[in-house]
Image 1 (cartoon, rainbow, N blue to C red):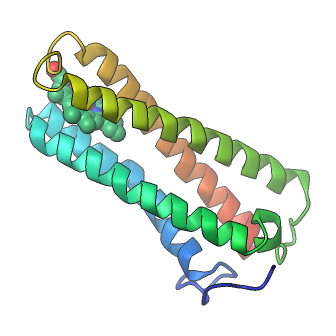
Image 2 (tube, protein in one colour):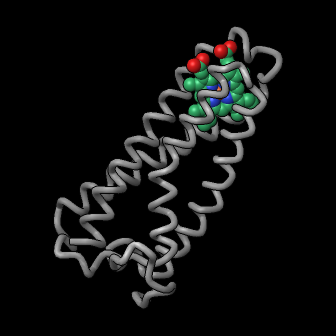
Length: 160
Ligand code: HEM
């Protein structure tokens, strides 16, 4: 436990390779979601569905791999122990906010995609659209928060 399980990442910080891949994916997620939402706005609903569903599946795999990596490395505290912020309330607070927000966003995302698939072609587009839009914007907002909090965490945990 506590030993690095993977090679160093490509960003030149203390983070390992998977951490860097997940970090960059986290930053890219709101942009990819926004790109997918534009297909819905342009009435290309099948492409919208394909982009949003594919992204969810890719993230599902990434999150599981990431969680395994963090656990095998001895937990987030042990991964970030090289930081000068290790053990501080700052790093703990940001980590907690980041994890909680991401769990909520991810669950909402799952519900959003499952419900949208069930209603597609019947009530969506149609009477379900306003609810779908609201939930979609909530998930989008969650991924923006996830990305911003990831930058703070990454800098505190692996750079400083
Ligand atoms: C993370 C997943 C998703 C997000 C964030 C999301 C978000 C959105 C947003 C914000 C809109 C409104 C776009 C606009 O009019 O400007 C929209 C529309 C729509 N979405 Fe999604 N969506 C997601 C997944 C899906 C899935 C999986 C399906 C189909 C199975 C779907 C089907 C639709 C349809 C048909 C519309 C058009 C509704 C209408 O204006 O009548 N969406 N989506």
